[in-house]
Image 1: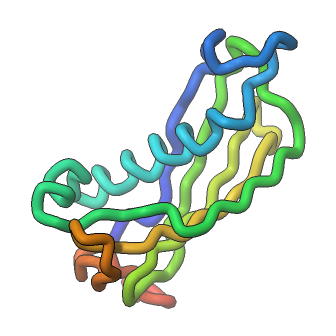
Image 2 (image 1 turned 90 degrees about the horizontal axis):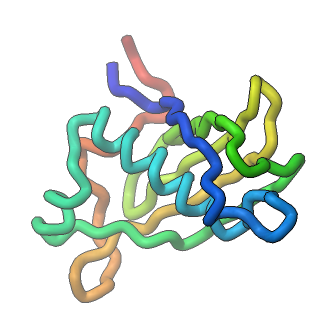
Length: 134
């Protein structure tokens, strides 16, 4: 069965914080990318190799909801889940946890493009059916 979700540990670094020691909102997309890149790796793909082959993904949409702040030196868990996908897009859901408490929830839509920025079909190896059969 294809791996469609996983969790990645992250510790909030000082450089990622504002003067109040709160993780700045700009670092969350970086953490989301770290998690989905690791998910891709666990699915048997390496994004660097995909790019070399002319398959690129661009963030077409991102929605983030901040429920509670993450603070300097917090140990967080970034959970990513790949949603059913086909065609030219891949969608993910994210949750950021500290000690089991949800701090942030988010969704992204990635569009698959070629080197000229033209939409192209996602690789068949990344497609996820609506209902996986086991």
